[in-house]
Length: 361
Image (tube, rainbow, N blue to C red):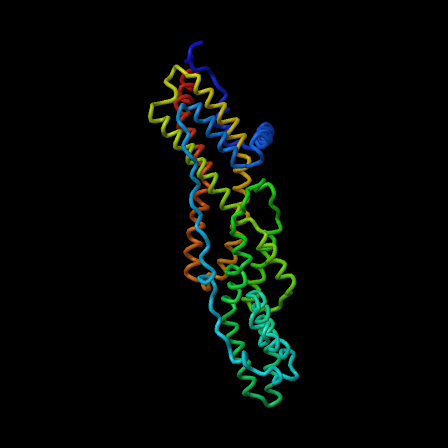
């Protein structure tokens, strides 16, 4: 049989299939491929590159995932919170005030060593209870003590954005959120909405506190932080980086093939064009694109929930965090576009064949 044959009419399914990633046949193929690759989602890219190499007669390059910018060191993220006059105030001086207990907890040895989230909650408690105590002390003829508490109240109100940052974006839970897992597992199929809810509720708390409503449910806030800690920001970054690296290798192969000239020279259609069609449909569209669609969806769910708090606390963000944030957002936006860019590369390689098909009609 000849290696080339006249271009026959097609149904334009190839280009259309590049963006139809959720068909039943595609799902079945993904399940089959996953079973064959040991459950590692990145193995689907290795298989695609292997088959693409054969279809294009181009050697497959090694996959090099883009580097992922690490979070700055803890010391570069923690904002310094100066103390106030009440840090040495004898809590007995506040007899008759509900605030007395709060000041006692704050000035205890445990209070001085409290985690940032606990310190935030103590300061919120102070801001909530201070006005009533200040008014009471003035009524009792203690203007100096009332003035001390008022000065501390104003200072803590001004420090609130920094206190919230230290307890959230600069804290251990959010650092863990951005940590890449040791194994990809079935990500992102194993994600849940709990982290999204947790992030959004932390954001809501922060907005409310900054607007002057200092009430807080301590246990509920700590639970929200624990949900953030279990989140998948690091897994998302790692998965998108790996995907971008694999598709960059595929794009390199396509560029090498295009250097040899058009894939099709109308009116002839080489058998390699049909082989490429089959490889792309089976190993790219069905093999990798369903997961790419899941990653894209997770990216658009997760990032706004994180960015919401960053926007609320923008003026308090330390320089190191802002620089990392800008790099993170630029990387994620670029990596998320990798499948679309690969589709454009595939279309460029196939265009002479599609054009020849139209001319043959």
